[in-house]
Length: 305
Image 1 (cartoon, rainbow, N blue to C red):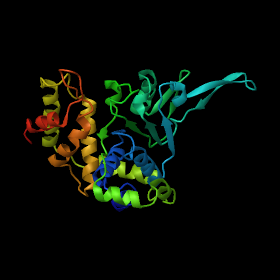
Image 2: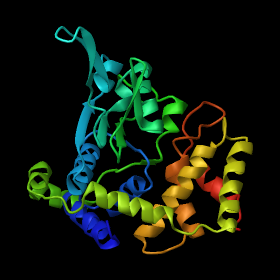
Image 3: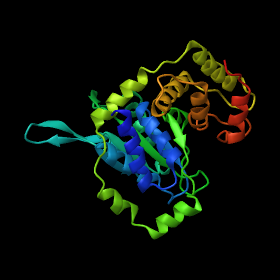
Image 4: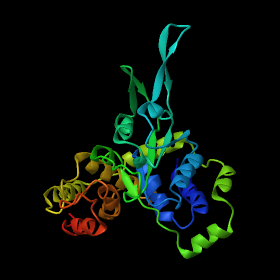
């Protein structure tokens, strides 16, 4: 996907999801960085639509899984059924075997069901009946999460949260965008008529291009200093993992690529850091997710190398 295709994708997506250009760019950067995306917000602000838009415009095979309290791991991964003709069990793949998975309202499922995605998200494979099955390439999970104060939600464990590269919030649209939504055509009908503007192969090409972007040793020193600061902060239960550090650099590379640069700047790290760190960090006092003010203090505590 040459850069002009990525720009066309963002432009087209911006005509469907109004007033959320920055959030769309963050979501695309997450896919370019080969990461999974967590969207946390109240119902009705376009979380599900965003996943549909990305799948449609890139031409990705799409599956939506509605997470509920009675959902079982087999409903996600698949199940082995006895075949009388062959006198053997045959595995029937579940909806996880698609290129883009929408895990809708993921925190309405029990922790046992949530954990069914752990191997898929990290290893991009599924183990069933002792056999390891590869998932499609590319493979992404976009999960939507309702606020924890809503009834019927289960908190995502740290191991699950750490597998999401970025967390974004869409928020309510501004007045002009909301009026355009109210007066305009239904977004789903508009999307149904919209052809793909890219392809999975083109996305892979863009991923490879991002991996080649230059990251200086000084910038790696800066990332390490940020990680160390989170691990020694008295405000936090624990700090960021090495996986988070790798993800931060990968996301910054993708962001720089979308900015049409061949190298990563400290500004890229600072832009992506809140989206990489906030869902991974919890306050020492009550275990709540780290608020924006805490993330700002962490950034201010580390000088740019």
